[in-house]
Image (tube, rainbow, N blue to C red):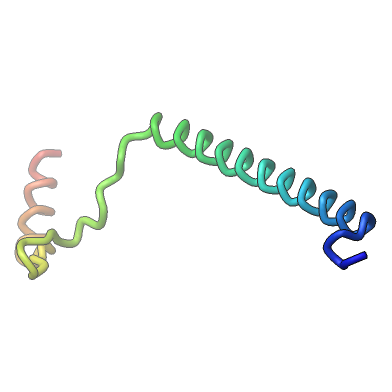
Length: 82
């Protein structure tokens, strides 16, 4: 008998294939469940803005940080409101 036609070998190969298919199904199910859970969490919350330090215009990033003078003026205005 040839190696490919050996009954024991075919039986072991068949069991191995079944095991591999079972693992693949479990992996897909786990991935799908994780995706569903992630979608639930993401759907309930609003998207957060990325970094408030600047924004993109063309290829350059513009800085929007306040200068020291502007910070002082803002602090002074906040004191007047109180």
